[in-house]
Image 1 (spheres, rainbow, N blue to C red):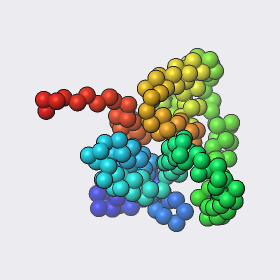
Image 2 (image 1 turned 90 degrees about the horizontal axis):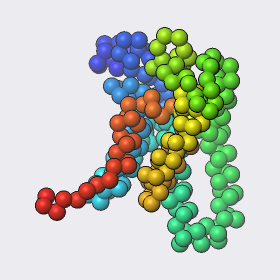
Image 3 (image 1 turned 90 degrees about the vertical axis):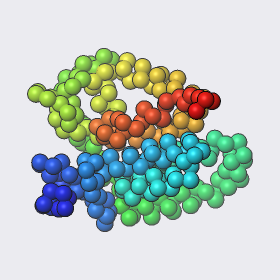
Amino acid sequence: MKFLTGRYRWGIDPDYKFKISSFLSFWRSPGLMGSPGNIGYFGLISYFLFDQEEKYKKKKIFAITLAIVGFVRSVYLVLVIYWILKFLLTKKNLKIIKLALPYILPIILVVGFFLYNKGILDLHSIFMRFEHWANDITVSFNVIFGGGIGLVGGAARGQGFLATLDNYWLLMLISVGLIGIISMILFFYEKVANNNNKYILFGFLVAGLFITLSQGISFLVLFPLLFLKKEINDNC
């Protein structure tokens, strides 16, 4: 920040839009990408794209490293869900899990307690979100049809709820209602029904409960690439 702007400022710089924040004892500096979330999701989706292409599989370590050092919990959530589903839904692994389950559960509890004490699984920010959603949203909308599109989120103009919702599904509910949400889920399901992208998608859908995914430029640019079908030209 100091090198590019000539000054250091905690939080969001009003002119250059750098955002400096912290996760536990780590500072998060996203440089020109705008926010730590953009760094994390850039690395996360790059990891998934590399993993799907044999030519780039060996290089996915760089992408996953970037995703991890972004220190964004919703990114970790997507990764954990993806890895767990990919492991659990393999028939060979299911047999192993059944045998190991009595030993796995105590380990999960111990690790979870340790992470909670270290602040990684701190629920304070979640409770803050609940309070934020319950008390701060003043936009009128219809649960079935929405009707508040363009009136919520950081990009809202004029009269509306300008603060970040930190909940993609609440944003969609206000904007396009339950009909829009169901239509979107059916669209995604059709795209991933027959491949491993359904594990990736499910991770993103869960993470959307705690972050407004579509407000990150990295997500908007890279996420659609996961659903493009490759066509091989034998003449190339």
